[in-house]
Structures are given as C-alpha cells and as structure tokens.
Length: 136
View 1: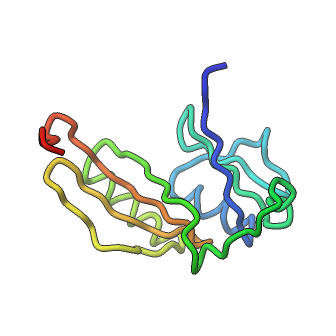
View 2: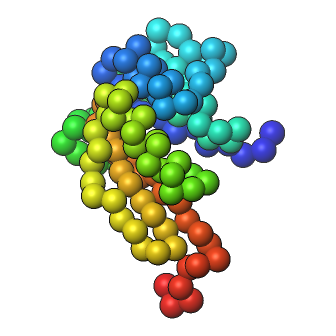
C-alpha cells in the first residue's frame, strides 16, 4: 500500500460537516463512515476523517481545541487554476463556510482561505512552479 494521508478533525455536527464537504465536491467513503465519523475523500491519496468530538477524544489524551478560537492546523489544498481556487471558495461560502482572509497574489502563487463549518482553517492555492522566483 502506498502512503496516504488521513487527516483527522473533530466536528460538532457530523451530518452538517459531511454535507459541507460533499457540497465542495468531495465524496464520502462509506467503508469508513458511521454515526461517529466519516471519511471525506479529497483525492486518491488524501482523506479527511471527520470525527464527532467524543469519538475524536478517544484517540488523544490532549484537550481538543476550540477551532472557532484556536488554530490547530493550516490545511492547504492545491488547485489546477486560479479559477478553481475562486470556485472552491464560492462553494465553501455557499455550503456555510467563511471566506476568512483576503486573497494573496504573489504572481507565481494565488491563495485564498476559508473556514469550514467547524472553524478549521483551509488554504486553497494555485501555484505555477515555473514562475517561482529563484531567490525564495
């Protein structure tokens, strides 16, 4: 089996979180979905396990942060174009997310940010690697 990423996030309302990610165009893997959590398929190798807080807590002795007020992680997804970045932000807002920060345009990279319905921080970007300045 090749390496895959399974990012785990605590959520307040599982059905609402599933609906949010489905509205962004991501599917749900029924093999890893029940009333305690769901597997959201971002790509062939990237999955997000959204777990109700009580179930998430069984995997850690640490306190679960309040993602509405505390940053736990910055999740970044690359897109194939600037237009896809903007479309993803539009979908996120329509699904109940928040357009969180002003867009950033570095010439070689374009980035926008949204918060999902549980306050997790998602950065969506397009990068033209052929245009990256040599003196980064």
